[in-house]
Image (cartoon, rainbow, N blue to C red; front, side):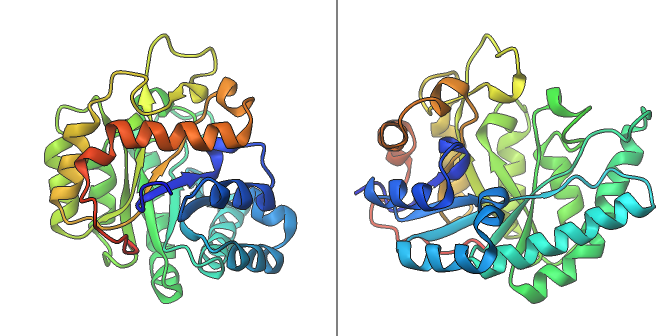
Length: 288
């Protein structure tokens, strides 16, 4: 059995269809999996729900919603509607949290502040819908190298500035080590998030250089890079966070590896550098 708080994010075994992802995760001794919308949609939501129920696994999160940085018009309305569907899918599979990636700069614009305002407005439109569905919208800050094309929210503090405008049951944040390890304010911001119950998800993977040609694919197994998982995990645990902890890796050689080997290697890495900072007898409780 793996650590009871470890969840395998489906992106770590990216090419596995939903049924295989569930089987591999359960066979490797995990209790929890983080799902992505695309594999769920490939089989249809009703069938996905049956698969999840038959797997015996918890679903720690659904990824992803967001991409809100569109000016008002049909494209923005379509994005908001798609996020409502994402909330419905998240609730249906029993996940407490929908991860939000904000979106990059508006096409043809350099207005970073204005783009962040578009994100805030979109979260405001969706917060009550999410709360009524029993889903927490989790704003994920991405490393600044992704600010132009993926996420204008680059720090945990910026994510909290948005989340704190809404009910904590409806809007929280993701603490993702890959994206925020570099931030000199990270420990203070983790404490801030915990003080109002805003940590909806804790995700771990490592940072190593050189960065891959495709910067999106530069995540590594915990312990294979430079991140201090001890200080970050201690800070998250000090807030009283009791949810699952996901390992989410985007890395082409890992994606090309056999799925059972990846699941095993992930658990070994987690046990080596994250688990020593957890209560060994704690029972995971939904963060949402």
